[in-house]
Amino acid sequence: MLRDLLSYGSITTKIKSMKSRLIKTEGYYEISALSSVGEFINYLKNYPSYEAAFKNADENRMHRGDIELYLHASLFHDYVKIYTFATPKQREFLKFYSKRYEIDLIKGLLRQIFDHRGIAYDMSLFPERFKKEISINIEAVAACRSLDEFFQAIKDSEYFPILNTLREVGVQSLFDYELALDIHFYKYLWKMKDKVLKKHELVTITKIFGYEIDLLNILWIYRSKRYYQVDTASIYKNLIPITYKTKASMLSELVESGSSDDFLKHMERSYYIKVIKRIDLSKDPERLYITIMEDVQRKAAREYPYSIASIHYYLYLKGLELNKLTTALECIRYGLNPTEIAEYII
Image (cartoon, rainbow, N blue to C red; front, top):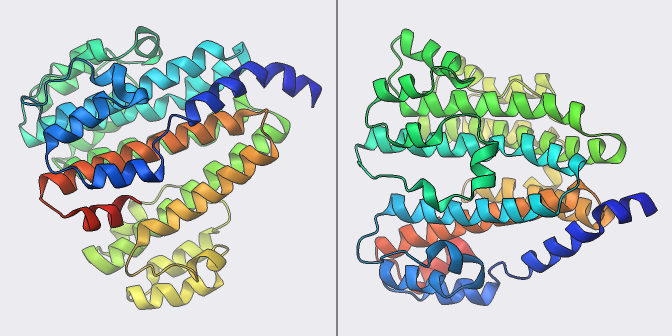
């Protein structure tokens, strides 16, 4: 305990300070009342944790892709703040965890290409320390305007063989490319945690990552049954090939279920049934993921305040905040009223 206190004392203090700057419930109500994208940008310009990222933003010229880039830049700045206070051992975790952000960036750049947006990513928004952690030439990838240019830019990276295999068999779907990157990330995460972490930190992070993978697989199967009518073989192919509390036999039962109603009957024997009983999956499937992930990480951070759990919990909360802001932005763009927006983000 004393060793943990000495190792995590300064970084835990820094994280507590950063957590106090996350947007509170009243802030989300204020955002819900905004009536234009310009007002949204100006709000963030004056919010302490986004002021630096948005200070040069021109609300009259920004597209959705620009705004999402600025939002992610604030996350990367937070990552660097934590990295600065981290010990060498803590930095090992942060370095391998940053793969999540690297892949998110690549997916965002692929969307630009597929959507033919032609938006230039301003890499100067990203802190130099963060860019050093990225394993690809992000400036070169950001400049790509076609898939051919993209594959040329990543040809020396770990992602080239993964994505090029799909291209060679004629895959031209953004969904398939993103899915391949996600599966690669979780396989990497599951392997690297055992190399970087020890003792209670390994147990805690294994639980958090295990829950995340289980829930993503469960939600994918449910969506496939309820919304997309995906065939059984494709559902199996698109699962993350890792199980934690949801065993392979249970996943098979869920995949083989005939409908979303049959799926819910099988879920009655699930490890996660206590939470599922409190949530109407048919109305809000995402709530299952958010409820369980927030609960397990909050408990871990409370039980081990001087550990990797506190770092991971903050990064999770920041990511959740960005998702809410992105949702609010879309709601404002489509003219939803404040009550409707609040229902989506609070």
